[in-house]
Image (cartoon, rainbow, N blue to C red; front, side):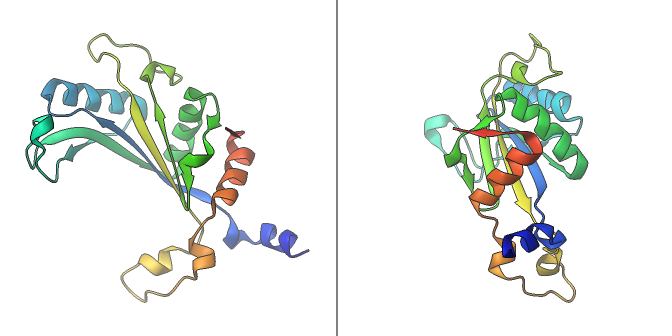
Length: 175
């Protein structure tokens, strides 16, 4: 009986907070431009540059150098692109890629995403996708004014709950 009440409680609902699509390019400037163009085609949003935080001579990377591109999507755009990204991996996710409040997976080739065609100027690129989940009411812990405490049971979403959410909303199977 308590499980039924928990399912009916609108504050226990789970939704996608954000989806971050990332393409690492290393120190090559042409690959950086190709990655930004590809992310703009996929998401319809302007991507940002990933800047290195420290020097790595083995990869010829200096501090402050552009080493990748990413785009962050929220709300309805995050849900709509999530459907396309899950289709690219055949609606199958590894169980070990799910942690508290998040899910991460990779896409080997961008042509697997529906609605995206191969562009010889861009070449073949893969990408990492990170999704973060949350519940209603979490804003009270993050706002500047009248900040309040949110209990751990409400703020941490267990992997089992994320699996149930993804299986119900996106018809995802787990490997």
